[in-house]
Each structure stands twice: as structure tokens, then as C-alpha cells.
Amino acid sequence: MKKIETFILIVMLFFVSAIPAHADSMIAPMPYEIDFEGQDLVFRMVPSDNYNWNQSIPEESGLYVKSTGEKIYTVSEYFYQELYFSADRMSFAAMTWQETNEDRGIVFCISGTMNPVRVTDLMKDLDARKYSVSHYNWEQYNERVYDEKNSTLSILTNDGIRYTFDINTGEIIQTSDENAAFLPGSTWVSIAILAIILIGSVLIIYFYWKRIEKK
Image 1 (cartoon, rainbow, N blue to C red):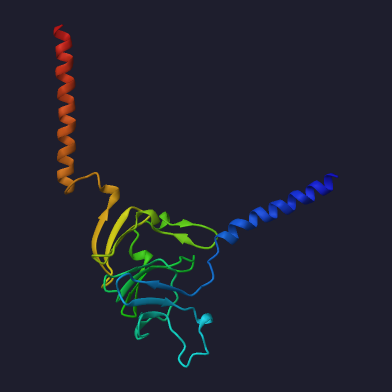
Image 2 (cartoon, rainbow, N blue to C red; image 1 turned 180 degrees about the vertical axis):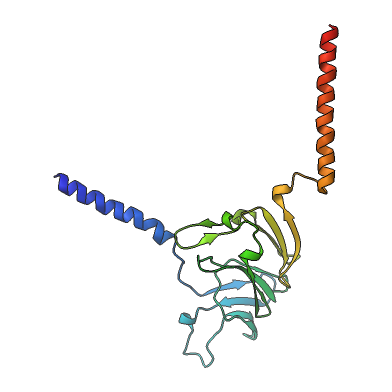
């Protein structure tokens, strides 16, 4: 009886240990479309394994005119659905899947031309990356701010640096270190403010004790 119980326990442990590895695996590429409200445009992502070879010209991933099927630009790489488009849809930012042997954080596609941004160029402290079974995270997903109207994307790295990108160009238009956000202005201004607070606290305590002594 004990042998059977031991065997069952081993089998259960095997399946439990296998679940996280499976859940952490990258999902197989699937075709998808993104429609843009109020615009006669559609973005299609077609993995190479899903090309319809019955067509005279196999459909490619890229931006199309929805009503006519006219091709505006194509992309040669598959991206998952975390795409952030510029207002005119001619450019987008793709948050890439981070395998442990890959260093790209964001890929900007400008009219079909790829412009990758490396994680090592965005993070000061690479030890802040969080590793899982098959990949790593370098930015805080819940802190992403996408401004579709102004074509900007703001991200916060795990080591506390916020970048705001112009999706039209892929350029960084603003950088701030949120670890030092409590220090307003320059370092000297911050030191002066802290000194004033400290001196004020000391004076308050001094006059308080003087008042007690008189009583």
C-alpha cells in the first residue's frame, strides 16, 4: 500500500512541476487582424506557416487598405498583439517576447522598417530583470502609458527609469528616474530644502523645551 501511495505522490509532483514550465512557454504564432475605428485600414499579422498558398500572391503581414486590399507596407517579422500604433498607423511599437538569449526590448516599425531598442541601452541595473522559466521581464507592464492621439508610448523599467517614446520615429522624447522623483529640481535645491526642514525641526524642538523649562 505504501508503494502505491509513494508512486501516486511522485506522479502528482511530476505534473505539478511541469505546469509552470508549460504555462511560461511562448504561445505559437497565430494570424490576427487589428481594425482601426473610423479608418479604412486593417493591420494583418500572418505567420509564415499560415500563408494561404492558394492565392496568386500570398498575403503578407502588414498594413492594408481595408476596402481595396491595397498594401501600404509589410513587416518581415512576427509580433504578438502588444502593438502600439501611431495616430496615422504608419508606425507602431512592438513589445517583444523576452527570451533569455535575446536583448531586444522594443521594436519600432516605421513604414515597414524595423528599429529595435536594446534592453541594455534602457536599463542601468540589469540585475533588476526578473527571470522565469523561459524568459525575463525588464519593464513594469502595468506602468505602460499609451497616448494614441499624440503617438507616444511611456514605459517604466524594473530599475525605475521611465522613458517616453515618439512612436512615429522610435526616438526617446523624455527620460526620468522615478527612484529620485522625491527630490525636486536639481540636487542642490533638494539639499537646501532638506536642510531647511531639518533646521526648522531643530528650532521647533528647541523652543518647545524652552517653553517647558519656563513652566
